Image (cartoon, rainbow, N blue to C red; front, side):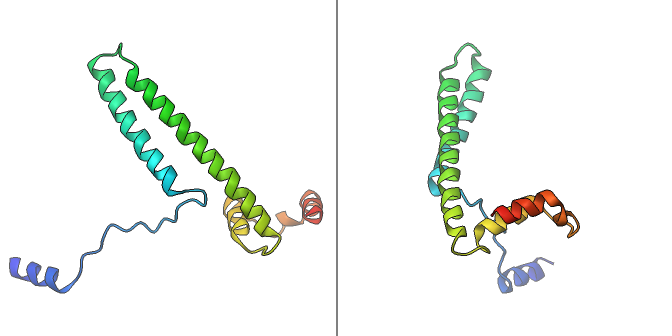
Length: 124
């Protein structure tokens, strides 16, 4: 049985742990690095709290890192949303369309005929 497994391993490549999930439109390398730092500080604060609950130095560091991460995410979202909206004038089927369709989900054609939606659509 070991020989069969060895032959199978040698003849077929192993699949790497691939994620087919596409990152959010606002995700960046900087945000990934801030997230990594934030998680490290959270683990450090958790371990320190178990040792001596009165020490909150690590907790303050973690809260500051979390605040920095949230600010970076908000800034990235705002900047890229503005770019997407500006691009909408050139190409209506661009990333903005994909984001809106994803958020709305499947909408029946009857729901699109409501007067309120028609007014909103005509205003665009």
